[in-house]
Length: 294
Ligand SMILES: [Fe+2]
Image 1 (cartoon, rainbow, N blue to C red):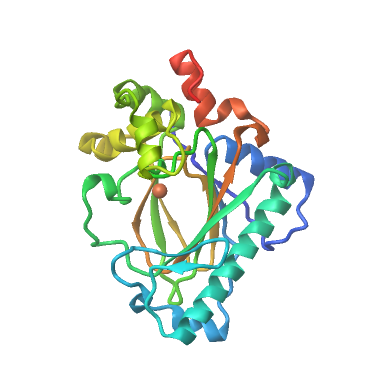
Image 2 (tube, rainbow, N blue to C red; image 1 turned 45 degrees about the vertical axis):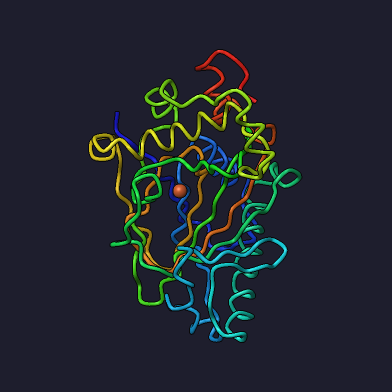
């Protein structure tokens, strides 16, 4: 089987649409199939006053990303007071653009979609060293140890804003079902009372379900499997500067190999809001395990 994990939408060039019914249907079908939607003509334009924000010196060096909560609180930066204001405004502007795109392209999600963090990734990926589990240069699905999703989807919109034409290079891997078949049975099971204890101690925000343990198992299983990283089905794709892409990062196997200066907006969505809930990681895993997981 040849992998075809990228769906390109040449004719989408405006964040607010209007989009034709056929465009919307094709985009939603591809998205819910676990593909990466690529918009080669959709740019997030950096304003003149924002150009000086394109430096890796803004990052405080501890966090790899600068993030902005929906309430406007920014973390991980060390700019001057004046730079902080402009940075907050740029992130807020990207958050609005990404939200408009999701709302106009997927009107069926509008009532249930929840806007989460916006992030700015100003540091070059290539050459950064992490432990294998923390290394997003390795193929993985997004699963957050401290933030249980309990089946809730993770939808992310990315724009490459590199001012000198630098590309952002990803690997995109095999379908979710194949990843699940490989690693779900090896996922660590919680100790008795562990989910309750983690929640009570504030180690997790909310309680981990069996679904969350399985997703962490898939994340770690793939990242720690060096042979899988090398030999599993995957394609390389370079997102040019001035382009935008999105995917369900809890479903699409992805790795970010190199690149600098990207913006990202996260959304969450309940499984019931999907046109095809049966394709979601939760439903796939429940079919595989033969029981409910949340
Ligand atoms: Fe990721």
